[in-house]
Image (cartoon, rainbow, N blue to C red):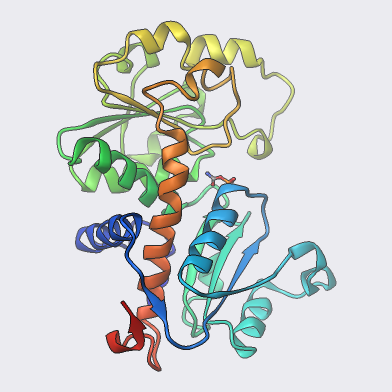
Length: 306
Ligand code: CP
């Protein structure tokens, strides 16, 4: 059963396979199950991009999307995540996408449910489809990962994107460094060294900015958006010092004039909206991979209209 929980569990060949399928979907490949196939998207935390693009991906593959809103579900009566997923499995849902505030929420499901779980983000843990769409965007730009320098800048400690991307980009041969407030860098990540933004801005091929995740900070109130922008953000002055051919990425939502100057969000270096577009194709590829791992016809190539 092909769950997608973290990028760590994906072998390099599997990553390239997903990226190849995503590219084919972007080029118009058709791939649909012949039999009725149901998916549910369980978002226990807020989302615009991930939830909407999974839904678009599911519909492009011809799946029926079961409406599920935590606020109007029996989660409100105390039903556990496990019982919620078992219920959806029992009534015929073939795959679930879950975003949850608890790190590694999926540990209580794996081995106990017989449908694929696709992680749409767990607490401060992982966000594997974000990482894969970031890889697709980088590969489109440079045609390789080896030898690239990627600066991941901002709220490293609270970012599931930082963790997923540092792991996978390092394995693919890129050099990753972390930047931003030193107190938000955690040496135990052991994946990348810390460098101040003014050192990395000139020699990085990709400057990947992260949102300041106020909702995950225990100490609130001392934050100054303009101070953050001046000390750690991509200002207009810093963008001018970026290497020729280098690009700007951000998983979004963006805090304009905090992580990045308002006018740079859609500048010629920015791939922020391209990332979102690629998210649909990557998610189509991930859903295809999960459905192919199901028993009962889903794995049979002849069961699909190509
Ligand atoms: N990048 C991302 O995960 O965005 P959403 O929180 O809107 O899904």
